[in-house]
Length: 383
Image 1 (tube, rainbow, N blue to C red):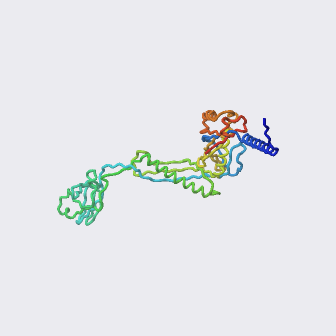
Image 2 (image 1 turned 120 degrees about the vertical axis):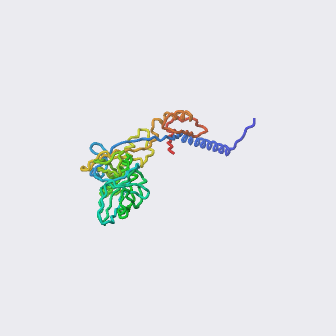
Image 3 (image 1 turned 90 degrees about the vertical axis):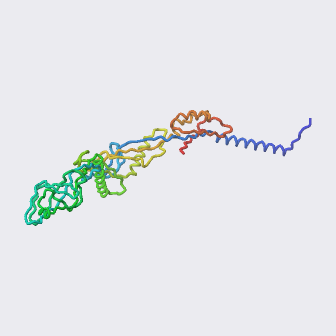
């Protein structure tokens, strides 16, 4: 059998190629062993978290907590008393017939005084009768003004100025020398009366309270040491008088209000800091604060002492929390040796999780999560 002869130079070349291939293979295996693994990408569900707590306001105290552990903010405390009165006309009215009234001027052109009894009749050109309300006396060559009332009710008797005759006057001399005329329109044949409704009373009360409130707020703002401080107010009615009730027939009514305004001024940014710290403390382990609504910070004054310059606010605040990588749900030991589908099936039942993606590297080799914890990566995708 013939022998193949390989020169020493070729042997060295083959050995070099072999060793180079081993090195490259080692590098590839080393690289793959260093980077292979699985990444679990979790899109969480935002959950609301609400807190309700109290904060004390003190003019001197500068600590965030007092001896009792209560939260304290520096602020100013005020008390202001306002009173006022408003007159109003009811919006609703009723119309009803009545006796029109007016005045007639009587002129006596004779040289003798003339007397007429009460209820003396005066007739308009249209034949509408008006009667004198009282006894009449007209001096010789004189005149007088008398009050007359319509003989019947109704709007027809609201007549314009005109001349009248006296039906019972028989003497031709007196008929020609007694002049009766009106200079103003008769009125009152239809009378409108206001009906006080509860809505009328409520509307006036609200408008008056708003006016007093604004007066108090303006006076308080003038006393502020810092114009940037936020003011929260508590109002209390200490006296109220209304001279009408719902259903009363009145042309107008009067409302009197006396209110006491308690107010507290404080730095709202510092209160927001306190609320955020309190909110974070309320979030359970395995979750973290994701977002909050600055405009969602609400508060109300529940008690105050203007003499001691102390007050208490009730504060409400809302934020949103999401699951984090420290959650027991995302414990890496739970995913060892699992496929992508097995991981998704496990996590889909948790309300804290919206969506799950699993990535393997290298994807053409690795199909399950490695057993080594350091080869498993958890990523929270908040979007």
